[in-house]
Image 1 (cartoon, rainbow, N blue to C red):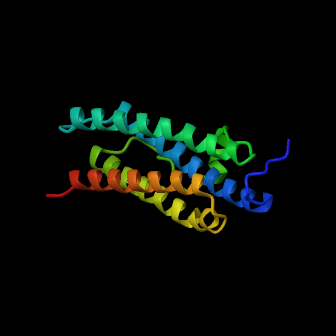
Image 2 (cartoon, rainbow, N blue to C red; image 1 turned 120 degrees about the vertical axis):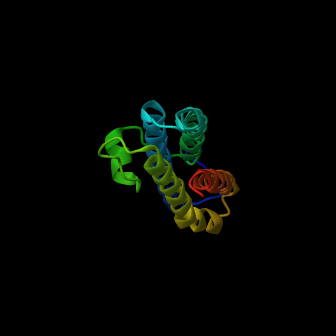
Length: 156
């Protein structure tokens, strides 16, 4: 059935593509955060292990929210590693970093998601797509706050 929500198909397609990139970045960051949760060591183990668990659980919920927004616009959400790897801008680790490097990598990951959202914000704004703007705004706030909290762990 044809979708008639007041946003032309070509605009919905552009918005959906932006959401797919945000979804891929979020999924990549989820995987990285979960990986770090499993493998963190050192004096901050307990703090980081718990913090990473909270963060990957939040990211897991966000993945569903973003994917459902894509579906609401009439497009299929990506769901394979192959698709995510072509859409994400977050780099994978080649080994297990030390705890401080994990924190730095996660700061960079959260900042990268923020940039991806900002790069795709205009298309939703220009199409008067408040649903996507709401998702983007909530995600921006959360990623900026998480990056700040992680950055604070590195302050002396």
